[in-house]
Length: 70
Image (cartoon, rainbow, N blue to C red; front, side, top):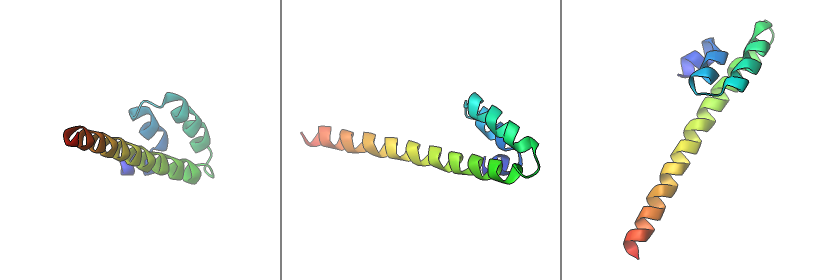
């Protein structure tokens, strides 16, 4: 997925269901100068999404362990 975010940044957003961000990224990517910021934005967004998912999973585990202890 990171490779897609670097090579085709707008597709990375579309595949994750962020249509509006994908359109903005595509408009930015149309310019040659905008390709690099679009790729960086797509990679950062992908990494942030993975971190948010990891945090949600960790919160669920903490709540589950607290419920077992009670």
